[in-house]
Length: 175
Image (tube, rainbow, N blue to C red):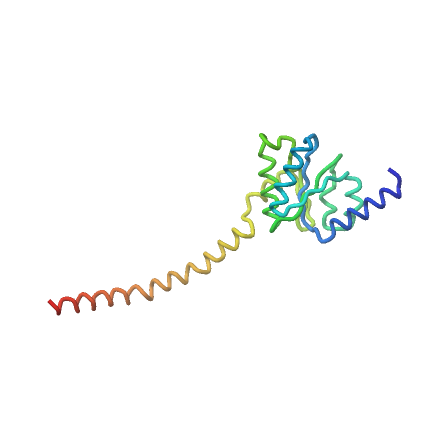
């Protein structure tokens, strides 16, 4: 590949990766076209993009960006995944696909980058066990509403008891 073509490809990669700060590196070498197309369809439904790149060109394109550590030590052809609602959801999806040996046996999550820090394969698997953004919000809402519900029960409990006693007393006078 000539220097001119490499520069064109590098500029295109920079443009496509503009605004991406966290990503997962995966290997899908050896997958047939139909499986790759099916994989891209599944990822597209979850708003995840995947781009297969030659790592030396990706290294040139991401030089000086937060994605640069992801390509340190990478060899051959890799695929870069980014998108989803948050990084943890992206990692969970990559690890789920990695475990699916029946359908995607050639797919494997090899590393990534989060907040400018390089992640190895074990780091990616560890992050996949974290709660996603939606799960964190749900836990936070539960923690916020928990004390309120306890306070509500404490305030209404004696009132209900008093109400039931007054009602039973009132019914007793009628008979």
